[in-house]
Image 1 (cartoon, one colour):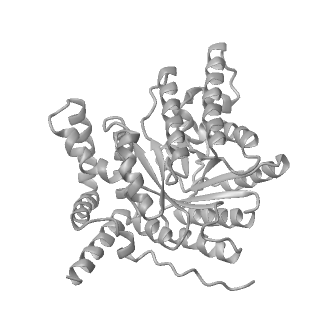
Image 2 (cartoon, rainbow, N blue to C red):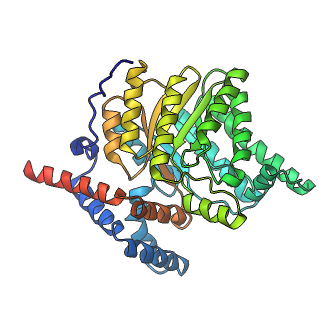
Image 3 (cartoon, one colour):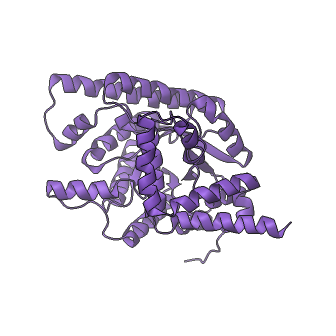
Length: 397
């Protein structure tokens, strides 16, 4: 087995990581991440923000929009996101517009979300800075019906009709993506209806991924069975002669998964330790690169070790940094040291850029604040990198 050297890449290069930020931007980020380092403040502040918005207290929306919203979201509308798209594009970073409004559970909201996703595809078709669109199946379908399908419970005629309408929405999105040649991610969700989502995604891939990976499914590697699922999907793609689009993430519903599993008296699908998740994630990276002839991969991760590993695997297997089958992605407002340094080194890199009305994306923003507080060292990591860049600029006079 040949020994390879990692490409010249450092995630500690703050000059590259924050090249797009002014001194004032850095000071603002410093204050925000300092606040998110305080667990009690995050818990209390989140509740206060929700209450203030509910009561429509004067100045609340302005305060939120110019602080946490500005850090983690592109805008309230697609139009408001355009400057962010252009700014990221200046540094060769793509934008993945993520409509982060949670559905209201009726056909009107599902149709509205479908229209919005189609609008992101229309813009992606016109912009070289938008390599992917993305949608959650529960944004266009009833989660309760998806759960019933997975459980093998018979649907009523009304439920069956609702499911068929949802399938038409999903097909409309994937057909538009195929028409434009724009890749689209199907986001992963909760395990008790993920199999239904997987089946829908597989149907779309078999239909639209004949020439290249247009539809990409998402695998949450904090679940101990996801590498096996990925391998089975790869085998199905081989048999069906279509390409498999794979987005690898660690996962987003850990506490909820454990709680529901305990309530239902079934085994927890989540890995017992973070190390087990890290190992499984890295094994999935290896598997995908080993089968790059059939699999296209996006590493959706803020983990530096996994990101570096993927660059090493690409070098080992002779995959060029700009090979269109391999992408890296991080959330907007987080891990700029990964995104900007990867893009600067020539790797295909994109940011998930959530957008939507301030009130509607509050659940997303509060999850980001919780995540930054809960993930060991995440806020501290961001905070320290910002500190280092401020100090570097001061030392240069």
